[in-house]
Image 1: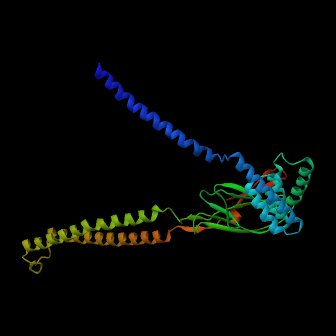
Image 2: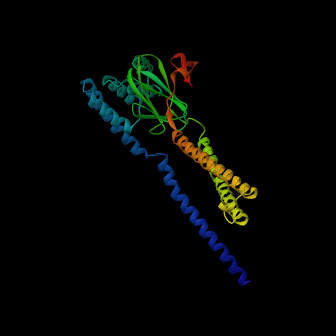
Length: 333
């Protein structure tokens, strides 16, 4: 009976230890979860709102005094403390005054998504957004090449294949699609005012003049032909040796044969010449084939081929957006 109790204690002890470890882990995870959800204490949230309000009022005063750059800085600091549509609204006005219509349009659109704006403020904001929309263009970039890194004016846009849009101002813009140093294409486009502009990029491709296996097949065949000359050369030497032995056996030497070289010895001589000629031909043809194959392999290195505009096909598709409509022309080759 005492042994049974001892065993039960030994079994319960580890179970209690495991339970305590689990509880400890849960207590450690809970603060991390609260921190990951950005849950701030109520007093800290209120303090951030008050500091944001002070910065906001300072920005309003600076904007009225036409100190736009300083006002922009105050609004940005306020927005970092409290994401409020009024702050974004005035931030957008400063950005527009500083000649940054794209950033102003983005901030104003985010402000208009909030339900905290009154009807009059929303109507005025929509009017400003419509005016800003006339100053910018939606640039759509398409690239069908996989693993191509696409950027606009040096700023990454997306990785192909795919397409993405970016708001830009009318003017000259640099669009780049790149896989490597060799496989890259850059287009400088002049974008005029309008609803949208679609640009499709075509990367150069690596091509060979012919199948990469062809040069090595020719060189390999030449090597086989050249190797076949070795046994032929051996047969030629063997028949020559038999020719001399036959002469020694019949005449003692070639000069001692008064009636000429015996037919049996002449047969070995003819065979030796034929085998030797075949071996020399094999060496020559095989060597030439090997040299040709190596030369073709050198000339068959991959080369960069740029897309030919004459071979591109134009595919026209309708293009409908929230505030624009038209057609998109895509080129392929």
